[in-house]
Amino acid sequence: MFDALFESIKEIIIESLMALFQSFFLGPNINNAGNMVSQTPGAFSETSLALAENINNYVILPVAGVILTYVMVLELISLVTDYNNMHENTTMGLYKWMFKTFLAIMLVSHAFEISTAIMEAGASLVSESIPYATGETGTLMTEMEASLEQYGIGELIIAWVTTLFSGLIVWIAQLFIWVVIITRFMSIYMNLAVASVPFATLSSEKLNGTGLNYIKSMIGIALQGVIIIVALAVYGAISASPLDIGSPGEGIMVILQVVAKPLVLLLSLIVIIMKSKSIANSIVGSY
Image (cartoon, rainbow, N blue to C red; front, side):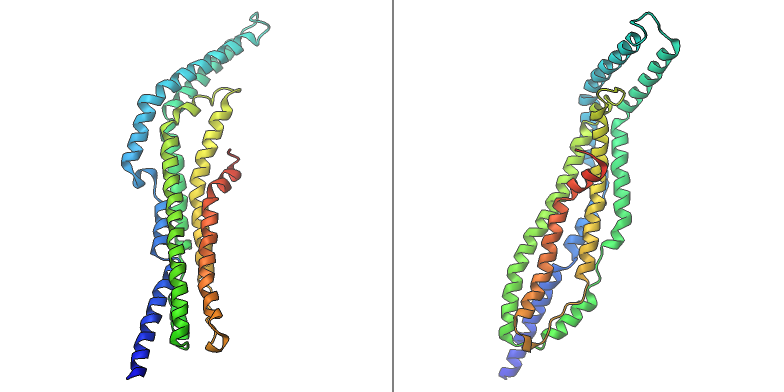
C-alpha cells in the first residue's frame, strides 16, 4: 500500500517538475513576446498611432514649418552671398533652391508616413524571422521525464523546491522581456509624434545632422525587433539541446545543474534583449 502511495506522490512531483521545466524553455510567454515584436505600430495600438499622428499633424507640423522656413531662408541667403558678395547670381542656382525647397516641403508633409513605413518594414522583417525563433522541446521533455523516474522522492522534492524558486526568477525575467518590448513601442509612438521637426532640418547642410540621426534612430528601433527575434532564436536553439539528467548514482547535483541551465539561458536572454537597442543603434550609427 505504501509503495503505491509513494509511487503516486512521485508521479505528482514529476508532473509538477515537468510543468515547471516547460516554463524554462521557449514557452508560450516568450513566443507571445516574439509575436508582439512583429506587430506594426498600428496593429499594436491603433489608438496610440492615431494619437501620435494627430499630435504630429496639428501640433508639431506648424513648428516644423517655421523651422523649415528658417532653414530655407538661410539657404537662400547663403546662395545669394556665395556669388562674389551678391555681384554674381545665376538663375540655375535659384531653380535649384526652389526645387530643394519643394522636396523639403514634401518630406516634412509626409514625415509621419515615411517614419511609419520604416517601422512597418522592420515589422515585416521580424515577421519573416519568427519561424526561426521556435525551439522544439517535446521529445526532449519526454526523455527527461523518463530519466526522472529513476530518482527517489527525497531527491525529487529537493529538485522541485529548487525549480519552484527558479520559476519565480523566470517569471520576473519574463516581465523584463515584456517591459523592453512595450517600452520599444512607446518609443516608436513618441518618435512618430515629432517626426516633422527632424525632417525639417534635412535640407540644411549645417543642420541636417538632426534629421539624419532621427532617421538612423528609427531604423535602429526597427532593427531592434530583428535583434530581439535573433536572441529568441538562439535561446530556442540552445534550449532544444539534449538535457542530461544523469543517473541516481551521480547525486542530486546533476538535477540541480539541469535546473540551472535554462535559468542561466533565460537570464542571458534578458541581458541581450535589454541591450538590443544599443546594439541596433551601433549598427546604424545612431546616437
